[in-house]
Length: 483
Image (spheres, rainbow, N blue to C red):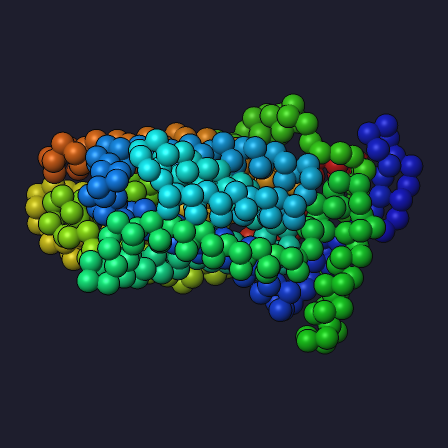
């Protein structure tokens, strides 16, 4: 690293931190990053699946007795909390660092999840769900940005999709847990659904311990006037990798020139998103909002459809959730590497389009009454095999689209806008449609979701960009880049 006099905006310096991070072979350090940060998605999947699986039990709970519409509204409360949490914590993550936010957001999530198990009425349940969502929203911003900044460029797409996809590993665990806690022969259902939230939140303590051993993102330090500290952390990572992998390959590109500066201002963020990167802003907004509507509309009301239209008892919902969750998990795991080899644009376009077409076809079959409960579950499993990869790629796209100084805020903003536009409306709308009890009405909801996924596919094909294998600094030039 070399410092030279710079313009009024700050001292200019050169740093090879990005090149050194991107040349690293996959190692134990990268596994620790994936496990300690990505495990949040497992816990989130566990939490959200429990709500879906437990919807019938919560509806029948003598202490809560929520209606279908109220269950839909509590799902929307969770997503509203996630929107607020993403914006607030995302703003902080770009200013005080990724590592500090790892702990704050996880503690918020843990305490709120435990509190959900002690809810006494609709309003307390909705409040605790909103606070749980706030913690998860903050996690999406801080964790996604850190993973993208720490993982070598050639593995970034695969890793990001797989990490986001592990949400469904948690969902599968949640489905199995629901089978136990909702079995009246084993646990009183009134105690079972409450215990599930308490235990799920308490598991976050393990994650807190794992994160103690992760460093701050060197790229964040580099861009916030601390290139010396960034280089010191990279040296430590390199020493660890050399001990297990041998000598490191040479960097494939040179140093970058930056200016020392503080965090990006709101005005700079606005100009970057809606002036110099307008097409990418439109793309991110469409991808995030369309997948959010499709996912949240179907997933948060999954159990209600099975109980209302197929007569599945609440304590058996987990058997139907399990294959659905596994299909969602396998999508990113099996398709993720193709986003780094075939490329972002064709893969994102294809997964969104396939999900939309299959959603429309399945909606028609549901309306006609052609499907049994297991056939309906199989159809949803196939649809969301592709939709899961598409949704994970939306987070990847938003993170790669904008300069490093505003990465967490960009992820947070588009997550918030997309969730508010597609995710909050979806569960409430479908809860209302299901309460009406008419299959044809629900079909129109599925058709809206299908149309939105096809619109997202067309938008990606028109505005998508190649980021596979490229350094983050090349995909989007930092605001502090030297001229």
